[in-house]
Length: 98
Image 1 (cartoon, rainbow, N blue to C red):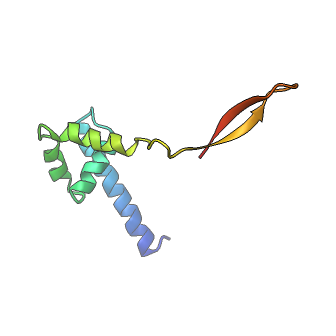
Image 2: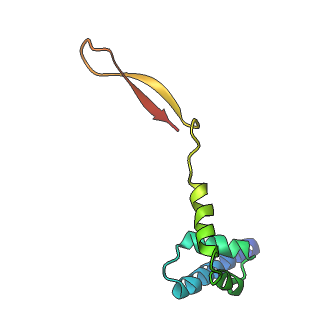
Image 3: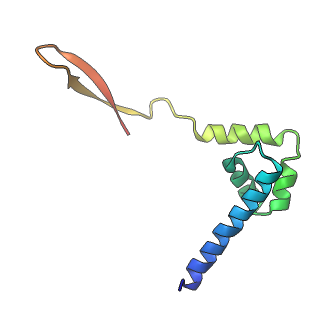
C-alpha cells in the first residue's frame, strides 16, 4: 500500500492528466506542452486555462515563449579536436561534447 505522500502525488498526476485531456478535447490543435504551461500559469485552474485560449493573442505569445525555451545559445557548445582517418593523412575533425 502506498503511503500518504505517494498517494497524494499520484492523485495530483491523475488530476493534471484529466485536466490536460479535457482541454485537448476542446482544442485539438494544442500540444500537451502548451496546455501544461497554461495550467501552470493559471494555478491548475482548468476553466481559467480554457478562457486563456479564447484570448486572441494568447496562443501566439505562448508558442513564442515555448519556442524560446528550446533556443540554443551561440557559443554554449564545446567542441574537441579529434584525429580521424587512416594512413598517414592528417585529417582533423571536431566532435561535439555535451
